Image: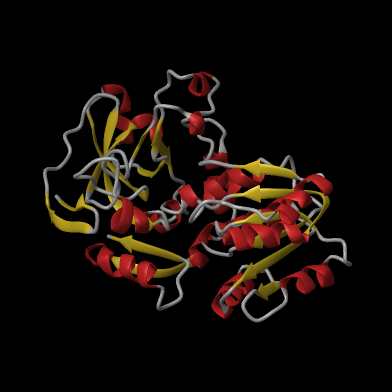
Length: 346
């Protein structure tokens, strides 16, 4: 089969490799669509995966082509989404079925071979059958969709609240879509590009502040009657944005941290004081909830897409043939043109 193999940092080769051999408890999935995650850029070009060689790619969907267990034969030919985290099922978080917190997990696309290939070997437990009206491209976005939903579920409800998202990238705009579904009273976005505002408007989100050309604090005050926002979401991962988040959240408000930090997080004393004096609640989040075929972020995401409440396809700005992954990676690495979700399809 053809696959993109990361041989070393910044050495991703598209070449022929052996097709994985199917084994008990697993399915061989033919990949039909795969998204490029923002985390794939440093993983491929700067830090590497956990070992070499590795086939990257953890956002993907496809068709089951082979299983060896007779009890799962009915899966063959089925369209599936894939939860990329493979839990150990033995540690204490796994015993509590909070698999996203597994202490000894494996992970498709970073710790073992992932979706930038014709075929991937996937544990059957990690497969989620797709409704017929959900495309492979939409299903390949299930992972970031569920990361967005899981983050919001940490807040113990958003209905009736004002929410500001700093960083309307893929996850940020998916969160905005979820906030509409969940009944947030007001959704504010702070970004840096006019095309982000255009995409947000296409999703029904009108209130956008360009942080490069507008006064962010003035924007927040004007839209919250000088009160500040109930919930602020930090989706960028740098000190300046974290400081701005603390400045605009109202007393007694909530701060949700979702972005991987670009460097050490450091706060001035006066900024830190705001956490104390405003009596803020700060939330962290990681990955998404998944329980096989049982109710989870993933089943809720399928329902929202199937019913037309969530429209992830509107966020796909680039859809490239599978053999043009390098082009997609460079678009995201070089940042010379606007993108939200870059997808490769077969």
